Image 1 (spheres, rainbow, N blue to C red):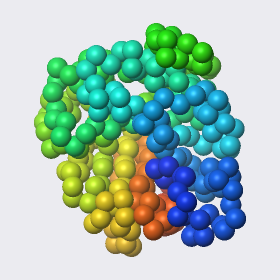
Image 2 (image 1 turned 60 degrees about the vertical axis):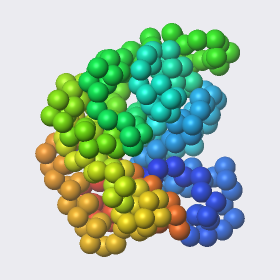
Image 3 (image 1 turned 90 degrees about the horizontal axis):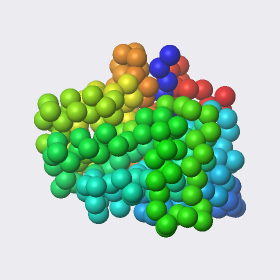
Length: 278
């Protein structure tokens, strides 16, 4: 049965205290507080640099059973190497501790730069390398280089499917060839609302629908009003009814809009969203 999860793009924001987090909430308790209210969160620190297995284990232990993290792929792969020759970088990324999340590991998000256009000769080999199961991820992680020789994590644990989503921000990804390539690899094309700064690419390319809401009128800062949330709730329901699993993450963290908007969307999806807490 298809699932629906609504959550946040990160959770460590000092200005959320007093509006989302109760005054006096310790930084160490922010994750458990957010995870008690949402079924999924994005791990964004993984985009900026390699983490440690101990960090993934700590995050795993702070969330309840059934919760999942979406893990943002390394910008070294997407922004510096621009998806070219990503083998060792991918291995290092996975070996940094993703598999330590166990059954809390959800989809992996690959965000491309705004100016990156579709190039089949670059995208196809990258998609081929992405592991589709945790067992395959463990084999890939074993190819890590000496940067992780002391703290690599390659144990896949119980073998489970591993999904991927691509957040492209260039209109060229509406090329039918790009969409077909993503469908061939069952990779979700992220529906990304960026306040009009980049095109919103709304195409079904996988059995997963992945949405990132960065703000409707001002990037990372504006709130979603009732009419917009009603429209997004309808969109989620249509995808769910078509048999897709749906994840929605709010990234309009300014003024603590993200958690409030996410809770308001959950209210509209109460009969289809995964019940939380369980």
